[in-house]
Length: 133
Image (cartoon, rainbow, N blue to C red; front, side):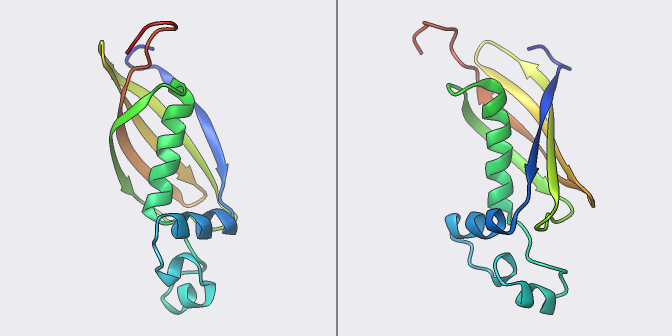
């Protein structure tokens, strides 16, 4: 992996179950993440995914690309448009920098409305096969 390299995309269907389970798992009990009527009363067309679920999907994207030994050291994201049930989130990434110990990746996640998430992730590089950490 060298700076400028693009990483393969990850396509994630945004289901009602993912939105609600992600909110519950992250202890985010705001009604807009699990109650469609409450979300509509607050001006949203439906429930929408919370930032912690997005954060987890960004982490999954990077570790799926780098392998199971990769360790996330820093994740910095910014939310854009919401992700609703029925949307498809497509995560893409590009290598920004690589050194002996870490790799930095820019990540963008888009859906039908535009950019849902942008950010950067710094991960400890996986050890070569058989090497000790």
